[in-house]
Image (cartoon, rainbow, N blue to C red; front, side, top):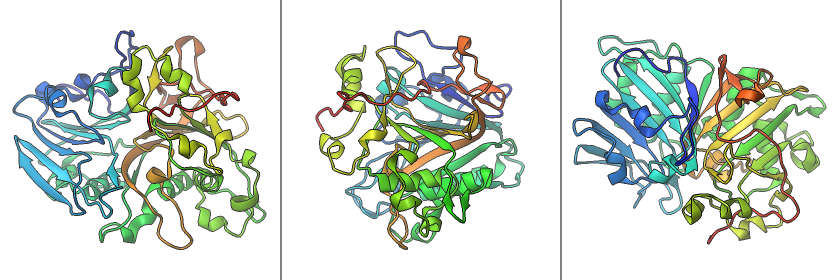
Length: 423
């Protein structure tokens, strides 16, 4: 990358929408890649349109691509057309997926990390509203910089995805000293020799560990006193129930559910005490999308799932996009803490609010995860410095934290239903 680092402390940016004037903080894929100076890119995605994607790169740029194309359980790499294609391990290849959305961009003297909520397909960068976390780090191939929690978590996540060791080793030459207030959370599919010994370091249990380090856990001798309102935005809904929501809600407070088994919170607390809003687009919103039926293929749930007896329908809230008659594809969580709810944290990444992404707990067995996922928690977010006239909803590191949706809590009306499509 030429010149100074653009995002030396990290930032959240939204992606632009076709035909809608973007804000000064929105970024295109071309902006992020800065292709004229890009030497190598590591790309992970659920869905990829290769002809469209490759049009953004110069022929001299080498690529490593991890996408969701599995045929068996074994990890492997294959090189073709200057692209190193990597398929990570799938212990259950017919159900487990790569859902991570991550770009590692290497330049002569810097590395750019981009955590995406959209896939590497045109729609996710033009007609579906997404966001990215982007962070630039200085790099010097003649030096080895000290590792920290962030760099180690990033290295482990790349190894989990079967990225070759020689590429992961390049992180030794990156200075991650300014990776503060940002914490990596990943998930990996359960099974196989590599992951099972460390499954407590992924998904909701990793979230609990991060939040515990930031705020401490809050169980008392009499149980649990919740103080967080959690707003979860996603583009996919799976099978959910209040038992799982209670466990996830505990993790959002830095408490591991297994540590609370002797308390009644896990089992008999009224559903209304689980202050989680699951934000998902309604049928009417999808039908009204200004871009037509093309939007609908990116919003996924099944009527049979929604109609299951234990599905937490009362927890559903509407996503309120920033722009009328548009749809949000972002995966994000907003946690507002305390009586005034003026501080908290925000998650940006690939995790939808699903069991497949965040994991499920079964007694004393290791947690089960279905997906490879990647995201970051941004700590120290302030919600009390907002400027309604400028559309600022949250502030991180004294800068606006731009999200593609409004942080509002609007439950479904009685006649609302989530969008089902043809699923």
